[in-house]
Picture: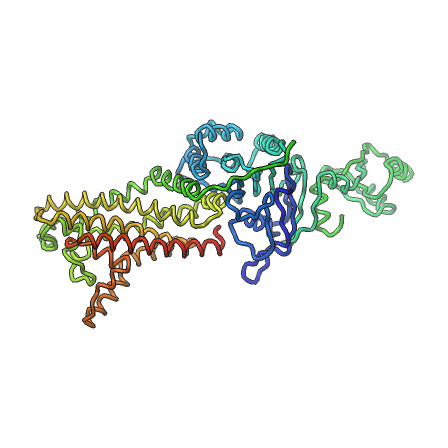
Length: 299
Length: 273
């Protein structure tokens, strides 16, 4: 049984089709990185999963049950777009509200527990409106964690978090799914961060799932490349361009050769052309580059 | 490692308890509720206290007319026919709009509708909590009205039984009114100003007053207007009988069911956030 199983899901807003025939499978115990451009249909899909908007067609099953079933929906935690909190209430009052909503026994203990998890216990007395963006995100995640949810749907939960906040979130995500039953759907544009925690990926474009894969499959799909530096990078690029089909300069100032070749062959070729290589290494492209490649139309 | 997960379907009472817990918590933890209680207490003082030239003093002859009209008056001839505890339902409408509007404005509604798959939970909880708030406003209105009427020196003479039945009748009507306002706020949930405006418009009873004027001109009986919220609220007056209270309970309950069902259908077929 999968945590989420979506088949031929569609959603129309008037004449505009936001999601079209989307299929998606989130296994139990997965941290599912849900990736796509702005307006690709991520949030709409997440809202349909959570029952915030009705679907136009298709089916959504959560743990084998229809997503409209009250029992399974009571165990879904969400953070969509921004935390749903009352600005004039304190963090504590907002958390207690959610505890009341979920009928949690020992509400105070539970609230203290989740606030500690996201390191917000010291700010419980702050009015929500006075919290920083990062603190608000933490409160939103704490609210989603209340009630021991089996499925977390988190839309851009890493926005506004500092380095420590992101590390905490990685720990929280890993901890949640470690029993192999609970699952998390995380959409984020911070692909580097997402790659550190995601076990599965789904990439959506124009309302359709274009690829679903595990982290291992992504790793296998990611091309290797040779990165090198010389004293004259522009001349090096020109010379490499005569022999190799794809040579690009990266943000760190390295020249990357994506062709299937050996580093020593590249170094030898440059040496023959009077260029001394000062540094050379091989590496794999990450999720971000894989995604950009995919969006451009190639792999 | 096991892959078995068991889900317990929350019962109707558990679901409602959760939603009511949220709404009562919010009601008691925000200043809005207390502000409206004070407003409800001040309104009767404002309408009943004699002005310096004594013109307002002529509006009432009895303290309890500030609470309820002497007889069912669907068509208003003077402000005194209108300015009684029914005004709680006008201000109560604004309170409901603010209360529900904040659900959407803050985004908290996401939490409610994610964990509560049944939309009727939302409608019922809002209707009950807002009815409770309006009933509390009726009480503060009663206190404010009695105090200001006594300070103004009006007569206290009244049929106590009818007065109690009228007050209870109006308090019972809170449920129907709260359900109407919840329904209006669900329809206009994306337009806060329209929500408040529509609540105010329906709360004034202008529609029924207009119908009553036509009916009276045609010399037809007006008692059928009691099937409407405003009509039944007006019917709870200082000549109320036990039957009046029963009628108020029935009308309030029937309209509450109608508005709750209609609101639930709208919510289940539209984007709630």
